[in-house]
Image (cartoon, rainbow, N blue to C red; front, side, top):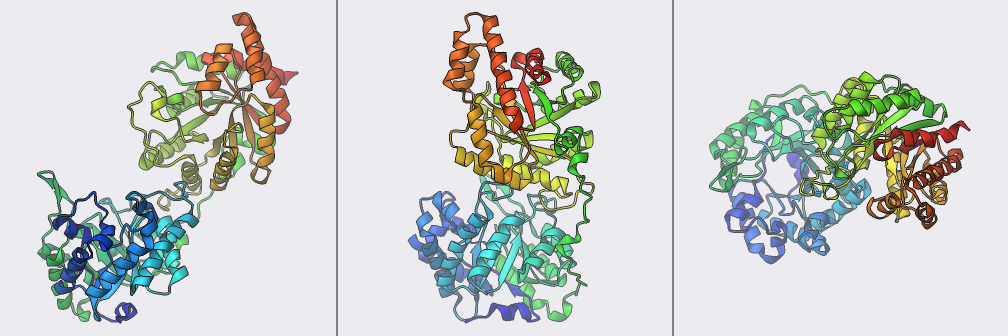
Length: 614
């Protein structure tokens, strides 16, 4: 049997194969098919592709298992066949490889986000990968290749999955974009140092970009690690011609860059999307012509992952006046107001001035509540800081409308503008609002976003790169003590606290018993809790909130009290009385209160807060 470790240690460069998917597509397999399942339904087709690459000069061929993980296979109803498909993939490659060619078990990303930016835990991700590893081991692979990963957290779980089941060598390959970093913004020097520290045997780049961009990244990587390097670029960036995406790099062009890659230290070279056996034939010829003496040895100095400068994290109590008061145990008051519908903030600013005069600590600014289109919460906060100094804004920031890059840009800009208090929420879906056809993004939920902000506060972006001076956000999250599935709500709250949440604001409370039960359940992960209070103004208002606003539950006894009010003014007074009662009962259990201002009338909110003066 071939020994891949010998290839790692010898002095020659070696040739990987090219694209499996490209060749299957050329042979008539539609892209909506599960290419991995062909290992079972059409093994001869897969075997023929492997043999073509072996004939072309490939010394290492990859199994047809890039997407053969439980998550991706589930989309085709094949989740129960993970081990079977991977075993067959390895057996087919083994048959084509013979005694001289190595077989690399191909493992790609799961196709979902994992923590800290998604709901799937790292442990769950590792278990998914382990199923794939088991099948590939049973089929007889010589090594593993983890390829086309953008998320360092995810490739680490794949690497751990292999290490827990096998001592075979691992090639760990990230994929970069044309701007030179992964889609998460991780720079080659960062992920190279990390993969080196985690024990990958070979570190490389594959897919997404052509030879030129790969070459530039490899030059950086060669100066970071002493580990062997691999490069499997696409045959250029795809171009759309007559409705088809075609890769335009010629075999000769790919071979020219193969020689350059070897000269800067690449040990294993091959191709990814768009490459064919003819590309590999030309690359193999270039590799043979590159003798060991022609390889340029680059001085390498492995840098620890701590190469990022230690950020001077701002202490929580110094991030804002609101943070200082909460850390010191003071009871804080805030009022929620909605941003203007148009571009004139005059009336809103006058309301905030009233709140400041009344001694309210902060004003909460929701971010497109109930998917309504209003002035942005951040712009509103900047106007308040400029025109009404002496009262702090708490900006609600939701995940609905922005992708990861947009959120990163917003948050860096907010920090530069002096915004300090954030309340991170997932956000209401567009179908709830007046624009149901608007597109929601939801790249991450509030847990993932909390992780992102925590990273910024520690001086790193979502790719693990240094941002220099760290941000100083006081991180708040939402929580619903009255959730229908309270166990699930508490699990999410635990995850938010683990992600870095420093305070929480509840949905409006109408049942003090539910708040008490919730607080007892979170004693093990307690952070300061600010209770939401909503002064009802009518029975109709109470009915609407109870039946049509997600997350709000009003007990029958409250509904009955509102229904018994026989005039509009009587209903308003009863709503205020209920709100004051709830506030005073909750006060011993909480660190602050957020009072809503129904219909923008802050006078209602101030009447509720007046109960604190007694």
